[in-house]
Length: 121
Image (tube, rainbow, N blue to C red; front, side, top):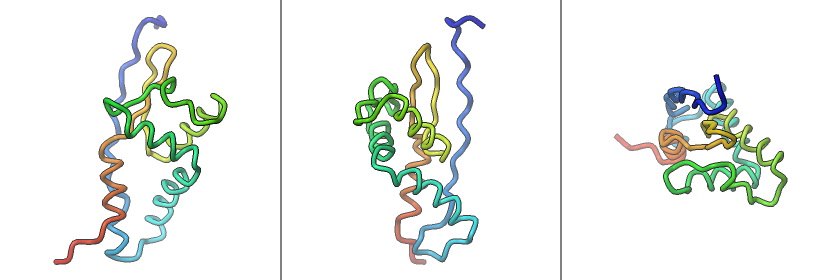
């Protein structure tokens, strides 16, 4: 494959809410573990700024070249973006020499659902 060829974009994995709203019932140990990974990834101010930059970027995705001005070196930005990706909060696609990141709408919906009050029946 030549460098000018574009790698096919992998279909994103469907993101299902990890758990019911926190006000609905106590989390199971497994649900708490999965949720903690997400919150741990967002618990760093640099990662939270990067996540916010991607989520709010026009078109719903951002080139790493557009969001790397967060006061740390480029290798550190890459490290933090990898942590967000490993936690399932971001997906990415390489285009030439740049990597583009996006927050899948289902991720934001799942996070919102987790933090909302359970609907009363």
